[in-house]
Length: 511
Image (cartoon, rainbow, N blue to C red):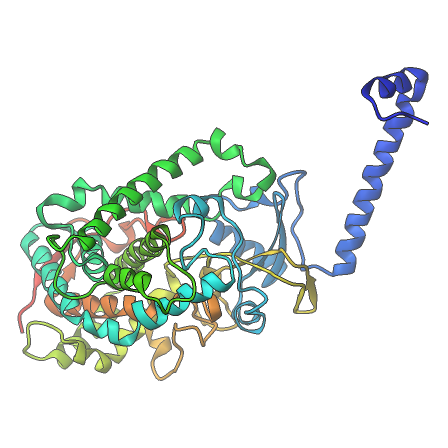
């Protein structure tokens, strides 16, 4: 009998048993491969593209995973199985399969996988978006829906939206007859609205926006949380994040956000701070923290994690929607003309659009839906992770499988959309399709338990600003530039920005 010591093993090899060991190792590898294939066939997993050793299908994601996955789905179908490093993954790309994931199996798929970047940025994933399913997540989700993002709360910020839309119009008008960087103006608007609602003041006055480096912080945030970092697919090799510099970037970005939030909270705890008189989201969270009715205590880090959700996601979604929307309208002058005619007819001789005007803007609402169909803010929805074995389309998918819903591909699902690459808001006229999670052909904010709880909160800022821009200006591209010259390249991240800013000439229009 061979003793369990290194010296005994060495002696055993010297006695001529090396070939036996090699043979036994090869045998074990073959048996393992056979069992793996047998298990796969027994499970009846969705179809898969060919894989490479170790990395699996990672090499097939490319620089724009949403597009690469869309083209793979054209070959393999709307549900496919990928081996991304060590992570078994299912990707769905049609409205029908998205409904299976987001509704039929919503509870079984209600958790999030542990993403390295989210863990480091969101205070160990204690925010709403990345927190795993459980009692803590249910509590903060309830707080967000009932306290932070309720219809009553959204209505209470109407004065903020009104004032910030007026500032946006003023900033754009100042540039005429020259060109304006509309993307920058929209970024300032989105940031100011969010900061005033969440923190009680804006940061654009006095150059604070640039001094604090908000734009760089947000760009780093969306790039770091892209969801397709190689290290996230090799949990056993977490050291890769250190080698690639990812960990140091995360730590630097986290420190900048953390210091900023410390200042914000200090202002709210100090009666002499700069905040407005109205109660903002930080006020609400601090009140809840002090409340005796709360089931689980909220730490200051928990509050900062929730604030980061609001700050980054709220700013980015509003900006991206308006930026892509104005780009598409300028590229499609007939759509622009029809939308402007509707807004100007409804608003009449008033200088500013009122929120009470918005329900009458049916075509403009169709424009927004078409923006979301072609340019969902998050092209691939945040990943889910199965908590139990499930069956979709007859395929058996085991627990601990990561799920991605390609919202960008769903918006191009030919079973739902005719001429899916064409910007055509008319497709929504006379139809009840909406983007709030009940119609699975249009899911820019997801659906089910893990859908974005801030849809109403964010859309109020989008609808008013878009209508006002259509009402206040006639839009042209700079001299010598045609719509075909616009760079429509997408930068993939947790959200999908345009690579190049939108430069325009905005001629003020007076009723």
